[in-house]
Length: 146
Image (cartoon, rainbow, N blue to C red; front, side, top):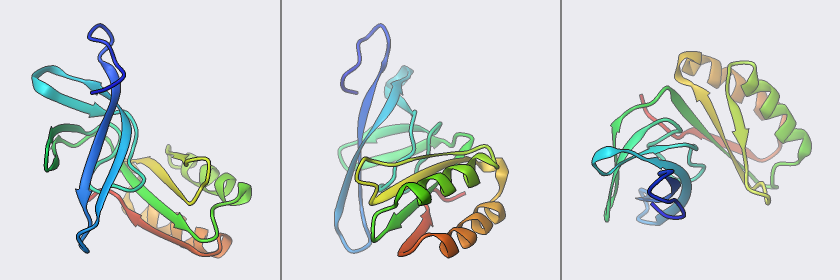
């Protein structure tokens, strides 16, 4: 944990993972420290796969392990050209309809949707199929596996 104090136990964690091609991916996310060296993610990764907001993790030098799955899935959206205001607004409205929310860095070359697992993968797939008709150059994937 970084940027937090012992009294508030909130800060950031650095998640790392290796892509199938061997590339190292690193992402910094907000988190809450829990007892026993565990952390709860407070945001979903937009690049690293395998976790979503609400998951409880144990961190190791070689990566992380989910020890308790939270209530959310993550959907990672990539676009070239970057997502414009229309695309972000469309995604936000679509995911709000199933109880989720969308975040993106200022450059908007990617976005991540945090969506309740209870919404179901079929609903997410329907949203993203429709999104493909509205957003040029878009690719997406589930960031979590249930």
